[in-house]
Length: 183
Image (cartoon, rainbow, N blue to C red; front, side, top):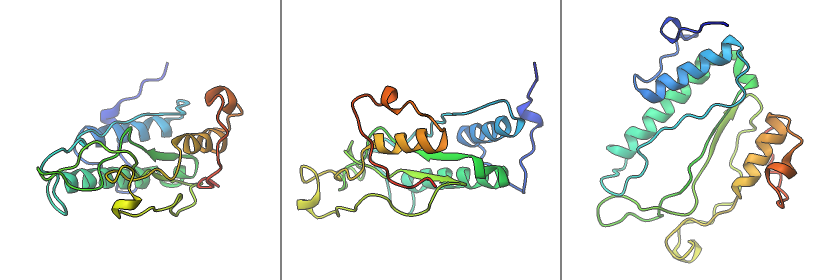
């Protein structure tokens, strides 16, 4: 068996990962991909988004989380170099946040959210429709309304990125709508 030493790994192209668990997990994932161990799927959790109070705007908790996220993804893409042509990074959340701020300067559990994808075959753009933030456009006048079913996203990743022909078994009884974000 091959030994992989995370401490000996040196990111390529001057990439500098955030000095935290998220950065470390991204760096280790890059190392595993580059070492060719056969990694097909990895899951990394960046917690802290459950901000019911003190969320902030351009500064404070939310801004710090977004900076950590963007710095980490940027370092990963830079480190991967041309290997990113064969890699897909997809971010998701199991819940959204309310459209409006609550009384304690945060947001509560919501309905819909934005997803982010980057990789060599990702066709940039915004997919889905933007219903807007007007009260009559919000679900129950409080939550962002869904415009894309998450199963459509997973179906496209499975079929186009992972070349799976097993969508009927993985998503039984569901006919996915092709979104076209993966070329």
